[in-house]
Each structure stands twice: as C-alpha cells, then as structure tokens.
Image 1 (cartoon, one colour):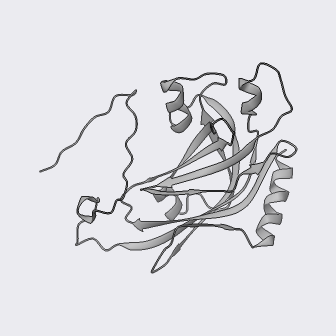
Image 2 (cartoon, one colour; image 1 turned 45 degrees about the vertical axis):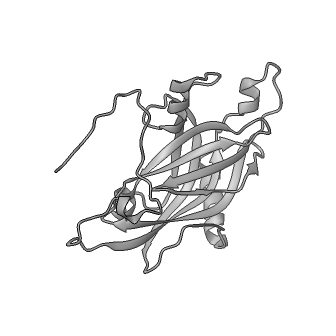
Length: 212
C-alpha cells in the first residue's frame, strides 16, 4: 500500500528524521545495495551578511554579526563556531561531516545562518544542498552559495518560514564560500572540526579577494 500527502504552500515543511525506534525509520528495500558516504562541508567564510542588530534597532549601530551556521540532515544537527564579523566578513574555516547513504533516503541538507544574540538568536536566512548533486560531482570545487530569507525588518510566521526555507526566501542575505567533498567510508561519523589544510584556506582567501 502506497500513501502520499500534499502540502499547501503555507504549510510548514516536514523533514525526514531518524529516531531511536528503528522500526519507524525510513529504510530502503533490502534488495538495494547501499553505500555509505561521508559528505564534508568545508565552510570558509561568509560575505554580504546583514547586521540583524542594526535592522531591528531604532538607532543605527556599527555593522556587526556574531554568525554561525546550523547544518541539518535527517535528524543530524551540527553547528559551526560563533564567529564575530570583521571587516564585513565572517571567517569560520571549519568543516562539518555528514554521513549519507547512496541511494539517499533524503536529499536535502539544510544550512541555516544565525546571528547570536543575548535576547535570542536571529535567523538570517538559509540555503539547501541536494545529496545527489554532491555525490554526482555537480558541486565540485570552491563555490559561493547564496543565502536567502525574508525581507529585512519583517517578522511573523510566514516570514520565519522564508528564513528557514530557501525555496521561498525572497531576499538575498549574503553568500557562503565552501568546498564540498565526499568519500566512501565504512563507518561515517558526523562531527565539526577545524580545517587543518592551510593550502585550502589560502586558496579560499585568494578566491574571496578576487570576488570582492
């Protein structure tokens, strides 16, 4: 028996998530051979990111942002460190590893950009990646990925959805420089770590200067 449902445009997205009850997890048919891959998101820097404190304050303050990126995939959530904006750029130089299967049970990897604040972190915007695009080598090399969200100085349920769903986000909220890699592994583990390859960092710095 096959069942499906249709969501309205205003309905919140429901993502597949793993839980402790294996019987309730989505699985592939046993006759399909599954390969384990480890997707690595090398996150170098963010540019053109708005100052959310200035947006919501009556008095204009110096441009700043304490930014971090939250990565979600099938119940896995990993976050970069919180880094303060300097000269309108946030530099993370961190990698996030995400285990996936091929064929993939779920396609979407969602990256949400936040500005940390003592009164509650502000969602700036988001971007989405497709697992198949990564494993089929369609996102090779250093790339800038655009972040989209709701118009500035707008709040409410619909605008919150625009910030967390790049498909309906109408305003450009900056871009993230990444190098995305994938490798076949026997026991993939999700984690956050510092990028220890200085040559990659140097190449990312040169690329950013060329696109200023």
